[in-house]
Length: 284
Image 1 (cartoon, rainbow, N blue to C red):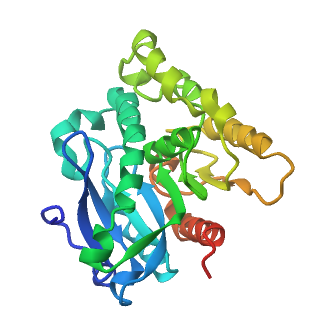
Image 2 (tube, rainbow, N blue to C red):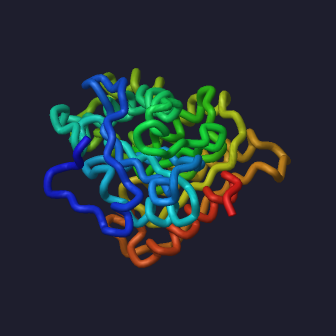
């Protein structure tokens, strides 16, 4: 599969990256950017992070993250969320009033991504394999919300890390998020909120290590929308010190709306993310 028109990856990343179409999406496949350290190291198996971007952007946004992971020996499968990137035919999903629809579609697709990672095609055609016993999942903003909801059902992931994401969607909607400020009324929103809100399903959360990164001043996803959820997850983990559940925050980052990336602490945030993931995937 070719990459998006006009998109050029940094040379250091291009050597370990492939664009792919993962089978099983509602439009015939899920476009993915696959970064695997084995592509330049004569093949081999690597643990993998499934990564999902935020609303309105695409999988190619965060190449620095993918390169850091590859250098640490971890593969990344970054997908385009429905309606984003190379899936522009469903472009209405980029609009705020359709955020809940976007989340629901994306949650349903996570299992298709997992199935694709088991496909022996990767070894036959690309000379690289994924260690499916060591999979992590994560995402930024909307991608992080998809992550938290998916983890409330049975899953194969070893750990998870999210950035600027809400675990309490009801609180976020009440604050004007998730399309409320764009005219999505309670009658339209409530059925999906009931299905999608991680806070309503956290009772089924299987304790796994979780890192949540957030700006205390986030004006899009207020910190309260994740703080209470992380505390509930910590309670689920109980006194077991082997399960790390951590909310790492900064008073301010200088990012747009204190939400889109981490501004002047972006490098620190990526370091926290990569350190957490590699530690729990048993790398290094």
